[in-house]
Image (cartoon, rainbow, N blue to C red; front, top):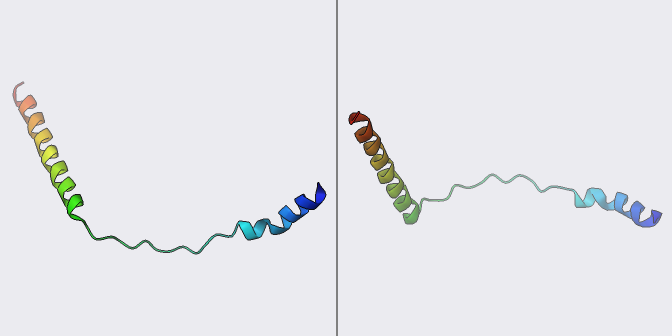
Length: 58
């Protein structure tokens, strides 16, 4: 039991090394992302109009 434990302790730093940080590269905006942004913007405007309509009724 001591030999496998000794090998594990001996080789553990080799398994635990981390790779260097690589800075993420920004991706270009796709047509689907623009479409989803348009839909979200229209829904937000509709929600704001609904809130305004509910408040003005009071």
